[in-house]
Length: 416
Image (cartoon, rainbow, N blue to C red; front, side, top):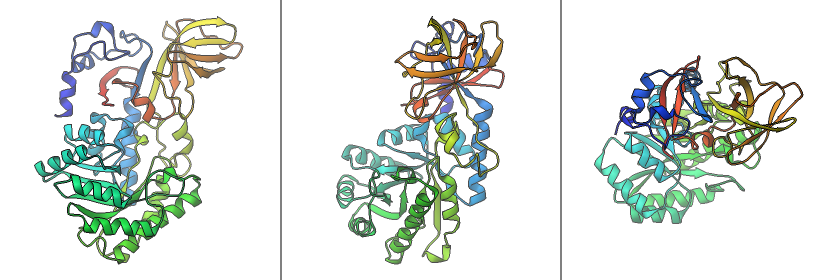
């Protein structure tokens, strides 16, 4: 399957927010009409993805990784959008990171040739499918985490084709991953004894540290490098062509770059492949990542929020309260509530959404507290800034891609 085929899908009731009069058109036909998100028949709530902001963010990380000598496999779970994978790969990405076997199947369905599974995989049915996929395509490169002897044994028992693995380093109180060097060596020994596994490096995710500061993240990253060095000194990567060293979520990738920059290639027996895996950069946000990304304070060329959710005021049942027709089914709320940014009247006039705060969400409603003089009316559209891309994408199957003036130029299909 190729992403171009997604334009042949027919518009129907499955895709919320799209114009009712577009029923039966293909996605490509609707995109070609270049309708306005505001008066082109789209119904509220509707999520809009900014085409200029998206392109800016793609270019920013491409330039950043090139500057720091990092390969890049952005986490695809953020969007689960093959069209965006294709654009990320076109911007120099080595591959795409996955979190589950289901993700890997979606990626392969759309031809992704290099996949880093940032998780353990012990499901026998999934491992049998993976073996077949690798056997059928010699150019398919796949790497997965391991963190236990038992996990290695289960993988080896189910596989019929060799799979590359990396020891995952965790931390006490964190998620998966070995907790100390001794267990790492036990896992490495188990891999060496396996018939169908090859140890090619070490990896982990600094975002799961129980306490995250620049000091704790840097210390953990140095521990990751030291573990790779120790495993290499013991000959654990003897079958590998290169040593994979991978980390990097969307909040601490500058620390990853700094520590990986300091890695001395002469300390290793073979080339070191430094792989960053940040995913949320692709759309950024107006909340959690806006506050935490290093691009705002330490890196020139700041990432840009690319999402805006348009909802409508459907009720003002009492003074100081407006109710919008968007709720938990439409917007993320795990890392902060949406933020009103702009009000657009039915006449097309726009102004800043001053004196407005989302204070609560129901399934299909947002409760907006109004200061005196906020001046909104039933029927007004309210543009909301959102926090957390991962839990935005998963609520929308087909997302309008809009130009600066609100013209819809394409649609992005997601596969959750």
